[in-house]
Image (cartoon, rainbow, N blue to C red; front, top):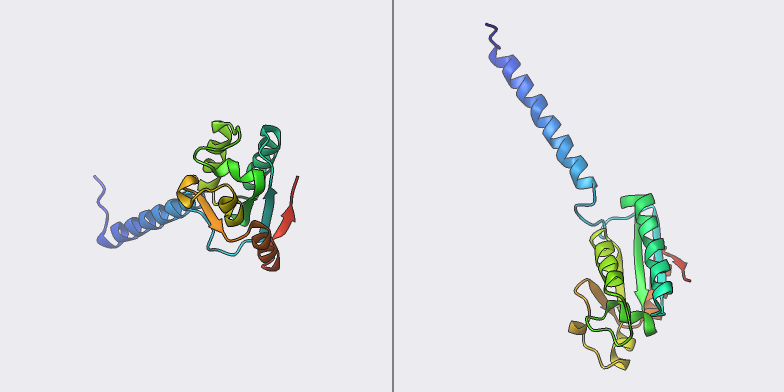
Length: 158
Protein backbone atom coordinates (compact mmCIF):
# COMPACT_ATOMS: atom_id res chain seq x y z
CA UNK A 1 0.00 0.00 0.00
CA UNK A 2 1.33 3.41 -1.01
CA UNK A 3 1.34 6.25 1.48
CA UNK A 4 1.58 9.95 0.70
CA UNK A 5 4.05 12.17 2.45
CA UNK A 6 2.55 15.18 4.31
CA UNK A 7 4.15 17.57 1.78
CA UNK A 8 2.65 15.72 -1.19
CA UNK A 9 -0.75 15.60 0.54
CA UNK A 10 -0.64 19.44 1.04
CA UNK A 11 0.39 19.98 -2.58
CA UNK A 12 -2.47 17.82 -3.87
CA UNK A 13 -4.89 19.58 -1.54
CA UNK A 14 -3.68 22.95 -2.83
CA UNK A 15 -4.16 21.83 -6.43
CA UNK A 16 -7.71 20.76 -5.51
CA UNK A 17 -8.41 24.18 -3.98
CA UNK A 18 -7.08 25.96 -7.06
CA UNK A 19 -9.25 23.74 -9.29
CA UNK A 20 -12.30 24.49 -7.17
CA UNK A 21 -11.58 28.22 -7.30
CA UNK A 22 -11.26 28.14 -11.10
CA UNK A 23 -14.50 26.17 -11.42
CA UNK A 24 -16.33 28.70 -9.23
CA UNK A 25 -14.86 31.57 -11.25
CA UNK A 26 -16.10 29.94 -14.47
CA UNK A 27 -19.56 29.38 -12.96
CA UNK A 28 -19.67 33.05 -11.96
CA UNK A 29 -18.90 34.04 -15.55
CA UNK A 30 -21.96 32.11 -16.73
CA UNK A 31 -24.27 35.08 -15.96
CA UNK A 32 -24.97 34.17 -12.36
CA UNK A 33 -24.66 37.88 -11.65
CA UNK A 34 -25.18 40.90 -13.83
CA UNK A 35 -22.36 43.08 -15.02
CA UNK A 36 -24.18 46.39 -14.67
CA UNK A 37 -21.54 47.97 -12.47
CA UNK A 38 -18.65 46.94 -14.71
CA UNK A 39 -17.36 48.72 -17.77
CA UNK A 40 -17.94 46.72 -20.94
CA UNK A 41 -16.52 46.95 -24.44
CA UNK A 42 -19.99 47.40 -25.93
CA UNK A 43 -22.81 49.65 -24.71
CA UNK A 44 -26.19 50.03 -26.38
CA UNK A 45 -29.38 51.88 -25.54
CA UNK A 46 -32.32 50.52 -27.50
CA UNK A 47 -35.46 52.50 -28.20
CA UNK A 48 -38.82 50.90 -27.26
CA UNK A 49 -41.69 53.27 -28.02
CA UNK A 50 -44.41 51.02 -29.46
CA UNK A 51 -46.62 48.39 -27.89
CA UNK A 52 -47.52 46.22 -30.87
CA UNK A 53 -46.51 42.57 -30.55
CA UNK A 54 -44.34 42.36 -33.67
CA UNK A 55 -42.32 45.43 -32.69
CA UNK A 56 -41.77 44.19 -29.12
CA UNK A 57 -40.89 40.71 -30.40
CA UNK A 58 -38.23 42.10 -32.75
CA UNK A 59 -36.82 44.42 -30.09
CA UNK A 60 -36.49 41.70 -27.44
CA UNK A 61 -35.15 39.19 -29.97
CA UNK A 62 -32.42 41.63 -31.02
CA UNK A 63 -31.47 42.27 -27.40
CA UNK A 64 -31.34 38.54 -26.71
CA UNK A 65 -29.12 37.92 -29.71
CA UNK A 66 -26.69 40.60 -28.54
CA UNK A 67 -26.51 39.03 -25.08
CA UNK A 68 -25.93 35.57 -26.62
CA UNK A 69 -23.18 36.93 -28.84
CA UNK A 70 -21.35 39.24 -26.41
CA UNK A 71 -22.27 37.83 -22.99
CA UNK A 72 -20.71 39.91 -20.22
CA UNK A 73 -18.98 42.15 -22.75
CA UNK A 74 -22.11 44.20 -23.53
CA UNK A 75 -24.37 46.45 -21.49
CA UNK A 76 -27.83 46.93 -23.03
CA UNK A 77 -30.54 49.27 -21.80
CA UNK A 78 -34.02 49.17 -23.30
CA UNK A 79 -35.56 52.64 -23.02
CA UNK A 80 -39.36 52.26 -22.70
CA UNK A 81 -41.50 55.34 -23.21
CA UNK A 82 -44.77 56.27 -24.87
CA UNK A 83 -46.72 53.14 -25.81
CA UNK A 84 -43.54 51.07 -25.28
CA UNK A 85 -43.90 51.58 -21.52
CA UNK A 86 -46.79 49.09 -21.54
CA UNK A 87 -44.20 46.29 -21.91
CA UNK A 88 -43.21 47.05 -18.31
CA UNK A 89 -46.72 47.43 -16.87
CA UNK A 90 -48.03 44.95 -14.32
CA UNK A 91 -51.44 45.48 -15.91
CA UNK A 92 -50.64 47.02 -19.29
CA UNK A 93 -53.29 49.32 -20.68
CA UNK A 94 -52.57 47.90 -24.13
CA UNK A 95 -52.48 44.27 -25.17
CA UNK A 96 -48.98 43.02 -24.35
CA UNK A 97 -48.45 39.26 -24.32
CA UNK A 98 -47.35 37.86 -20.97
CA UNK A 99 -44.70 35.88 -22.88
CA UNK A 100 -43.06 39.15 -23.97
CA UNK A 101 -43.03 40.45 -20.41
CA UNK A 102 -41.50 37.16 -19.26
CA UNK A 103 -38.83 37.47 -21.95
CA UNK A 104 -38.04 41.01 -20.77
CA UNK A 105 -37.81 39.73 -17.19
CA UNK A 106 -35.47 36.95 -18.29
CA UNK A 107 -33.25 39.43 -20.14
CA UNK A 108 -33.10 41.58 -17.02
CA UNK A 109 -31.55 38.61 -15.20
CA UNK A 110 -28.77 38.70 -17.80
CA UNK A 111 -28.02 42.33 -16.99
CA UNK A 112 -30.26 44.09 -19.50
CA UNK A 113 -31.65 47.30 -18.03
CA UNK A 114 -35.24 48.31 -18.70
CA UNK A 115 -35.73 52.03 -18.11
CA UNK A 116 -39.25 53.38 -17.73
CA UNK A 117 -39.96 56.98 -18.68
CA UNK A 118 -41.27 58.93 -15.68
CA UNK A 119 -43.09 61.40 -17.93
CA UNK A 120 -45.02 58.57 -19.64
CA UNK A 121 -45.69 57.04 -16.23
CA UNK A 122 -47.31 60.29 -15.10
CA UNK A 123 -49.24 60.61 -18.36
CA UNK A 124 -50.75 57.17 -17.78
CA UNK A 125 -51.48 58.00 -14.13
CA UNK A 126 -49.30 55.06 -13.13
CA UNK A 127 -47.05 54.82 -10.11
CA UNK A 128 -43.74 53.01 -9.85
CA UNK A 129 -45.48 50.02 -8.25
CA UNK A 130 -47.60 49.67 -11.42
CA UNK A 131 -44.42 48.49 -13.15
CA UNK A 132 -42.77 45.08 -13.19
CA UNK A 133 -40.10 44.78 -10.49
CA UNK A 134 -37.11 44.90 -12.85
CA UNK A 135 -38.08 48.28 -14.37
CA UNK A 136 -36.06 51.33 -13.36
CA UNK A 137 -37.87 54.66 -13.52
CA UNK A 138 -35.97 57.56 -15.06
CA UNK A 139 -37.23 61.13 -15.14
CA UNK A 140 -37.57 61.35 -18.93
CA UNK A 141 -36.85 58.55 -21.41
CA UNK A 142 -35.57 60.79 -24.20
CA UNK A 143 -33.26 62.63 -21.82
CA UNK A 144 -32.02 59.32 -20.42
CA UNK A 145 -31.15 58.13 -23.93
CA UNK A 146 -29.21 61.33 -24.56
CA UNK A 147 -27.30 61.02 -21.28
CA UNK A 148 -26.51 57.37 -21.97
CA UNK A 149 -25.16 58.29 -25.40
CA UNK A 150 -22.97 60.91 -23.76
CA UNK A 151 -21.59 58.07 -21.58
CA UNK A 152 -20.62 56.08 -24.68
CA UNK A 153 -23.78 54.08 -25.36
CA UNK A 154 -24.60 53.55 -29.02
CA UNK A 155 -28.25 54.09 -30.01
CA UNK A 156 -30.47 51.63 -31.85
CA UNK A 157 -34.16 51.73 -32.59
CA UNK A 158 -36.64 49.98 -34.81
